[in-house]
Every structure is written in structure tokens, then in C-alpha cells.
Image (cartoon, rainbow, N blue to C red; front, side):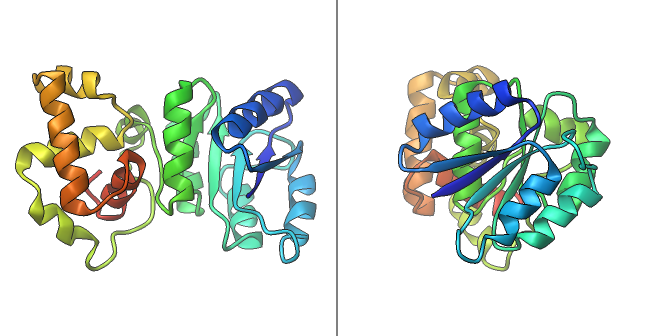
Length: 215
């Protein structure tokens, strides 16, 4: 697996690279510091497949809409996710509209970073709950496909509530506190959800919920 981390701050690139190498030990992580460097890597993509691009909105050559659109167009088969420490709601909306598959704040916790990466690599998208609230985006990408919504009919209203919160990155403890449930009850709900929708893990369940438009 080959991942590009595109950011003009070498120390941050190195920190993200270390995170990714711990999360995906078999991955090759490439570092670039500008849009021009990224485009040169994209030109080599037919012979050097790129599986994911993590893109800083404010590195040289970038703009929230046109810059993201240029990367998405250059790498149509590669998911592109936005990284930023200071992106506004408008920036995120423009990036998502341009084809970005998610937004990973630079300050996010390691476990949420891991969940976001897993969801995007599984074909879904990821936006933190606070970003969805601020931007008015309900999942970010892509539109629900016919048939994706069907599994939701198998879930009880409470299970759908748990799934929505699980998809925003909440832990069992946080879900329990939000829904006033014991943590052991949340665990049982999660187990039932995975069984009913035939998901292998929480990340896959979250990806399915995103595609179905539940979040």
C-alpha cells in the first residue's frame, strides 16, 4: 500500500508518517511538500499505484476547492482526504464538493485518526461529528447508493442511534453516556449491529452507515 502525505511542514509529515506506519505496517509512505511535488507523484501513478492521499489545505499551490479538484482529477481512483489545523467550515465544504473523501483535523486523537483512515481506505468517508455539525454536511461523501439503505431496516431505532454515534468515532463509553446506557449494553448493541448488517468491524459498519446516508 502506498500513501502520500502532502504537507509543507516536515515535522508534521514525519509525525503522520509514523502514525501510518504503526497503523499499516506494510505501507509505503511518501512525503511531499507542495502541490507541484504531489502532481509529479500523480503522473507516476499508472506504474506506482497510490492508495491514499492526505492533503494539507494550506501547503504551497493549494486552494480549498480548485487545488483539491486538481488532485482528485489527477488521481481519480485514489481517495483524497483533507488535513488541516485551521480549516474553516467553508473550506471543508468546498473540499468535499471538489471530491475529498474526508477531513482529518491535525489535532485529532490517534484512535480517531486510525478510524478515519480505516473508513476511507474501506471505500467510505470520514468527518468528525463536530465538523459535520459546523458544515451542515451529513457524511460528506458519497451519495447513498440504491440498496445501501436496506440494511438499516433490520436495525431497531436504538441500534440506529448507536450506529450513528459509532460512525462519528465515539467509544462505547461515550455512546453509553450520550444515550444513558450501560457500557455493557452498548457492547451488546454493537455486536448485534455488526451481525445484522454483516460488517466485520466498527470501521466497516461506519463506512456502510456513511454510504447509506445515516450520518
